[in-house]
Amino acid sequence: MLEPSSRNRSGETACTLILIGLILQGIEVVILLAVGLVFLIVPFLGAVVLGIAVIGIIWLVLVYSFSYQRAVEGDYSGARTPTLVFGILSLLSFGLISGILYIIAYVKLGDAEPRWSPPAPAWGAPPAPAWGTAPIPSGTKFCPACGRQSPLSSRFCPGCGGPLP
Image (cartoon, rainbow, N blue to C red):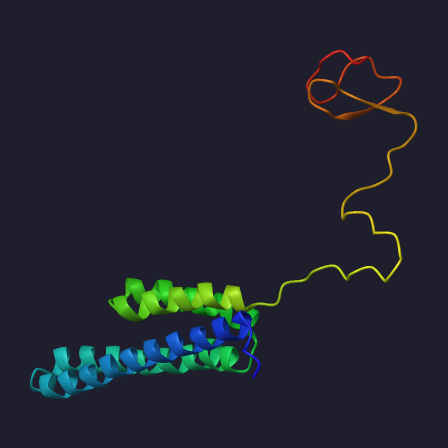
């Protein structure tokens, strides 16, 4: 039986962490709703607590839509930034455990993102040059001090100012 790749396991772990954070924040919202209903005896205080609970419900919908749902669908790069933002904002708004879970999920989403690698050369073909390397022009020389490339007509290095051979 084939083992799932670590990339898939990281994505599944991120989904689980986000879901646990959502459940914890859902419990907080339910507690806020209950406290707000009890505090309706003092209208202003009850209204403030209920308002915070409504903001918590909106927060849950946003986290579900932008972070959890994208991660479940496999859009790890699309879920990564919202998960970090939700993690930081959760830490700032007294959701300490949820915030930590979201930040760990952010890291796991980064592990789950596909990495690009250059294709392997065909059998018997010469290896391709490394990315970013270009052929060296024939009319150049290199500084012995810093290694910077300069035209043959230069007497001093444009990088460090040292004399050129």
